[in-house]
Length: 137
Image (cartoon, rainbow, N blue to C red):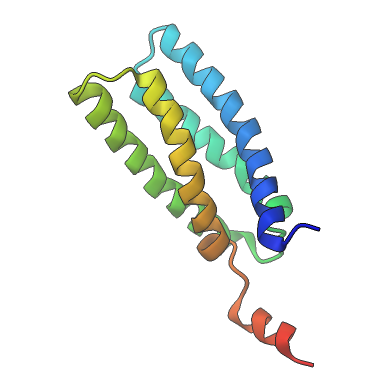
């Protein structure tokens, strides 16, 4: 039997793999057609955020709370991830000359881990009173 965290991590992986495979394929296609890698990443990052919000809220973390504050935290976490992703592309691709395809693939993995932790402990956290209610006899 899986623990809650294991189940959430597995579901997060399913949502993330499906979303990232689609977005990375689109990224490769757009850059192959001549689009700037940072522009392609920017467009697809936004698409990925929107596409995964509802799956992660309802299925991965089974969060029943209001969407407004949760969506704000979700967008904030992903916004910080976006800035980090953009900075790494700038540093490693533009300044150091590494291939954007490899750097972006690596960033998908790094950001996935960081964003899981952000969602687990901040975005979709249970309200403080929920823990108290579960501990009551």
